[in-house]
Image (tube, rainbow, N blue to C red):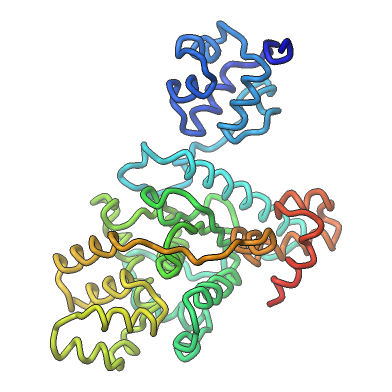
Length: 382
């Protein structure tokens, strides 16, 4: 009991910094500490020292190591919004979960930067550098050729998960980290970071797998434009950013559903004759191209084949359709690959082999134990 009541002398500015960066308000964290708001305010203003047990609780809720509270001053970190040129309208209410994922993405981006420099690997993204005044359809067609996956191969994929994994591997080869984490879908479908190299695309693993494919290429377009963002969906786009988001949506829809191929589809031709977009036609096109219905509706809207009103009403109805996640438990090796991607995992393993990092470093970066290493090595060679 005495240990729990032991007060510790720390810089109160660090506690305030940790709370604010994690997205907690004073009322919420006081409740977690089972103390009054007045008492907690005394801790942050230095009029009262926290107990060691309180610091342990704060470390858990702020997702920080306990040692951070014993630093002389708050660490210099970018504001979480400083990495983005485009933010959703509700940026002030970004969830604690999303803030944590942004921190994780920055961390793995920094690790990748260090490892690639140590290995003297080319760290520059191998993408086109384009401008907003260029035609997104022509750019998508160029990039499609560079990615090197022919439409015949795309149409033969047996599942949405196969499609996602193939696209992810293809884009990772362009020196882009693609990470996946769960965070509230209400606040973001994904985001991109470009304040360091290599660029990072983060996808929301809570989202439908087909929707993730579209978000991947929407964010890839942002990488080409060098305009990092948090992507929350059309309804969250501000008027100032509408041109950029439309450009990226147009790019993604042409990349995934080339107009020249779409026009030869019998279901599409039936739609053109009747001008009635049935759910059967939409479903069949979704299965054929392995893209979401949202992506197809976006494509048809850019082709001016459906009205804006119809487009918006269909998006609302799609939102009401629940996403049933693929069943099954992800083992630690599979989770490692799913979250961090083959490119990052390969980089860590190569760095360990070259002696650039220690065994402890390797397990920390991969977040796995020794017994899972062999299986991870098998998975990245598939």
